[in-house]
Length: 447
Image (tube, rainbow, N blue to C red; front, top):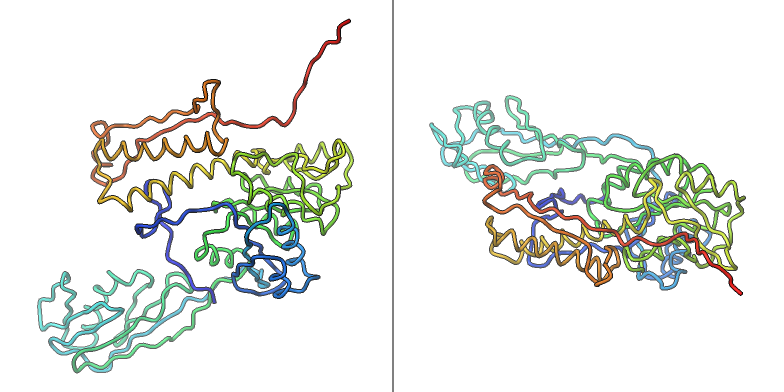
């Protein structure tokens, strides 16, 4: 069973969860390989020999890993997860039943998950977590209202002698710990065993809740149905999905800015997976995915008319041009260029990290013009880096980055936003640097 992580929460329109002085940075270098032929836990592998020790060398997972590790420069590591239970099935919510067999007397204390509830003779204070009642049923009714404030993972119901904790989401919420100070007698039992949701997408959600490092997803199953399922899922994530298909029409299955589909007639080519490996080590947003060599892959067998139709559907392949093997395009199935999508993610992640770091390492970000200017400075810094370090944003002939940042001062901010500590006044625009994929050169010969 996969241990579930806490919910991910967004502040500043940024993913920030329980900020500490150190802020984890999201990277682009980790590929997650989903193996549908073997069950295995999330594990990191530093080279192909380590993969060979864990999986048969004849397996798809080994062959894909070999293509990924075979690129130059080589990725530092890959993550492999394995799940053969691909059918989506509902889980079973765990149920825990607290039974009181001897009522609480005055000053007895029920400690539930570290929270103390005190029994009093009359006029209980909810603020002090006090309950009352001259018999078990009345005490349970009084306790229910208090417990509901704190046990957010459960739906709380009661009978004449029990308090029943039912998981709101299957697998989330462990059996409550129980301790009693006084003469009362009670116990808690697991009356219905929990069972997690199963299936390809349920498994991915459980993995993603715990492991947020991977940016690229590849899979051993490249069937049309799986492509549609994984593409739909990837659109809910801040990730990209790369897949090689033997179906020329596969790119027509989905329209996703986060999905890249390449065609190759050789089932063992794994050319898209190799391209993901190249991009995992390249300058994020600063390289085009077109014209790239994928080590170990031969030319795809495809006609000129087929290639044209493939490109119209926002797919691409791998052929030889001018004596060089290379990718024929560099787009996602939405029609957007891969480097643009990755560049946008780079800016997003770095701004989120910068604002998170500012919040974590300040007493507070004041809701005043000084605090706003600190946030603006973070955005300016990231956009400059996007221009001068990553080649995502255009620079002009004078070497000035082509972007603008505007903000709303505190005096013009909606009072409700101030009261809710929610600032939405920073806006920016930037010109993409782009890349040249085609060109026409005109010349004149003279005597």
